[in-house]
Length: 156
Image (cartoon, rainbow, N blue to C red; front, side):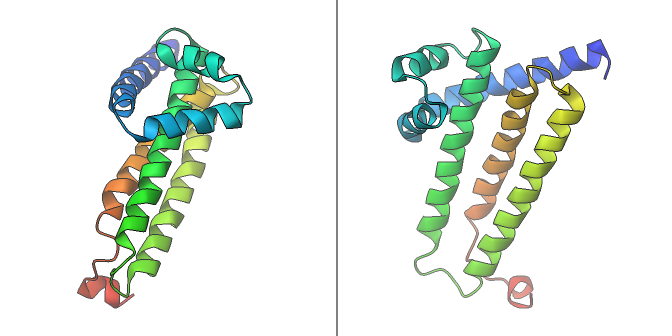
């Protein structure tokens, strides 16, 4: 990947992270995601809060903000699916499982893409998390229709 292409990709990652960080900051899941991030990282809460205070401050802050946003998005997806389940149609389980399989494939694709674009570079993990965040957000939008049986879903 050329230097110009990497800079362009980095700029788009930063812009995406800035937009996602603003959306998550107002989200009720942000506090729970931050607590989970403290648990997973093993860092003291004050250190994690410092890293999350300004997502543009450093590469480590960008990575932690992307990690927090991904945790929050996953939580929202799980919440959406759990809300859809009561009273859902007979195709709920099959649609939910198909959605989870697509998300797992996308997560693997994000890891391969980040590895290809960044190698062992310091932005690889942030790029992977940003890609996963997009996949989870798309899955969350799709999850709003899980359990709504159509003729096509009943014939599968």
